[in-house]
Amino acid sequence: MSTLPVYRWRLAPGGYATRRQLRARGLRPGGQDVAAQLERPRRRGRPPLVAYLYRVDLAKPVRPMTPGRWAALAKANAARRVCPECRRDAGYVIPASLGTCVPCHDTI
Image (cartoon, rainbow, N blue to C red; front, side, top):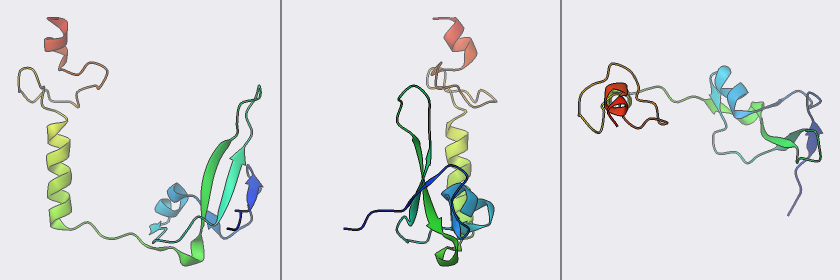
């Protein structure tokens, strides 16, 4: 078992990227293992924040959205707008903190 190279915040060498950085470039890790680890120190003895780094040269292009994926995404987003109490489309995404649309929440 080999250990991952650990770099401090903003000191990682070129050729590595986080998932978000890969996505911004239109790439994905593509099944590769984590290549390195980035640590951002925090105050008061708290453990550091950790980000995993992937090699950019091994990354693959993002898969394109198919019509089926677009339909599934639209259905999932529509479900987030339907109030579980009154079953109406609220016209906005229902906040998880409320659990229902505002009119239903106000009647509680």
